[in-house]
Length: 208
Image (tube, rainbow, N blue to C red):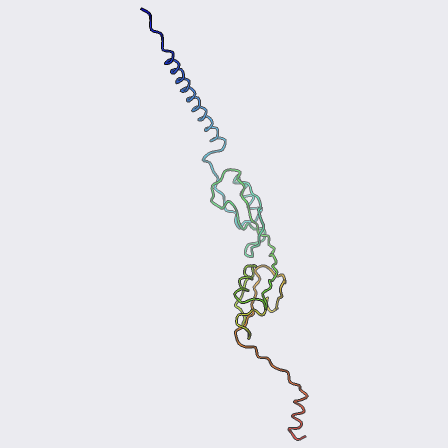
């Protein structure tokens, strides 16, 4: 009686499954190796807390960041009338943020020089509300308006201290200005009287 021939189809399928299993195991090993390498290389899970350097002088702030294994760079200069010149006004990332070692912290430093702004054209050209909006947008501060006889809330002039300022005058940003506006009362115009007529009237009235 002849012996049964081996099932080649089943044998080939078994070999294929074994190869796939080996490839899967090798892939898992490679992925585990790569993950461990990346974790070591990128220091996964390790971070530095950004210190607060706001208010510090620029050089001191940079030294403090360098001591904490962080880099620093001055990104911008602004003016702050409260802080001393050269002090850090703002930092990004902010204090307390979790970052990687070597991260750059960008600093905004107080220039110490108050920028100038030109007075816009609002005198005898706008209402009180419009003038206030325009002047504040330009960075000026405002006192309570001074009211004089004239059209209600019509702007007649802009004062800086005791001086009247005209359009285009450059003043420090944040300068305190006063808007002079009408109170709604009519302007009383006093006509000049010829003094010669008054003298002649007095002369004849007294019978001289």
